[in-house]
Length: 246
Image (cartoon, rainbow, N blue to C red):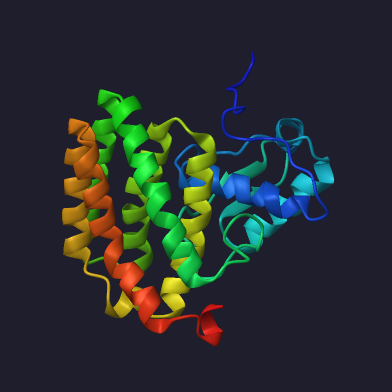
């Protein structure tokens, strides 16, 4: 029996540190919900073919994910890589991808046009089932508003990953993932999440974004996304490119 196809998730890789790019793609697949906690990733052989890299390269990537406690690697006939966590990391997994070489301000400023375009495309392509998922993600964040920071951030980011999926644009969704991952690290070490984030405001913005996207109101979509991102943009400008955030 032929298993599921993941060609819409993974793409060919090349480069000296290809294993980091493999790990990046796998992390995106986990964060965006393609693979849930307790589920197995495709085999090393399958991933090797999908990303057109060697099996040792995939093995290196799986070790990186295992060391970061994102997956567990089980041995034996029925073994394989199993998802252990879908929470964002306090430290970057690697510097592969869009986020590693840029400043905090550059990441924040890049996020605005990206999120606006994703929301506009999601309003065009989203299905009733996907809008229901988006609504549930808002409810889940509300239910976990007093939970630990990684749990709150997971439910916050889940909303954005669902929008990325609804956009039907894989490249935008991957860039969004890379920026979110790096921003979480930057916001954690700057204590923005501990001191400046207002969870109730985030919930309200998600509700307003969902309403605007569902109605297909392009002007309102732009306005809501800009309003949502403004506090972080103002915070990034207030601290500037300090040595800690270059």
